[in-house]
Image (tube, rainbow, N blue to C red; front, side, top):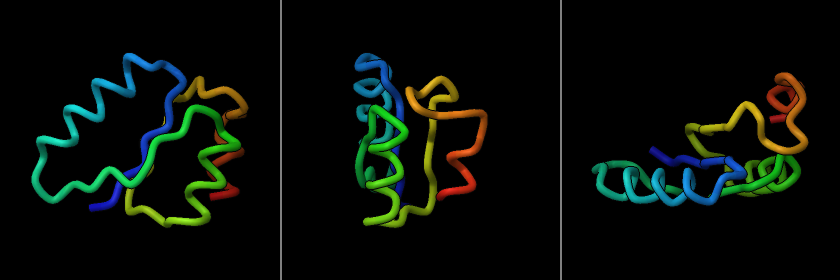
Length: 68
């Protein structure tokens, strides 16, 4: 399963990277720290799952989901 993680907290990103690296069958495709980065990454490399911080800078109440 290919995953993109989007969060603006460096500690959270580090913890998720470590946790996901230990899971078999999970490929962390990329990380994003802003909604703009997330949209660019997701459009280039389509994942199976996107894990998004609901308070990601530039993220407006799910409107970003419609763009994905």
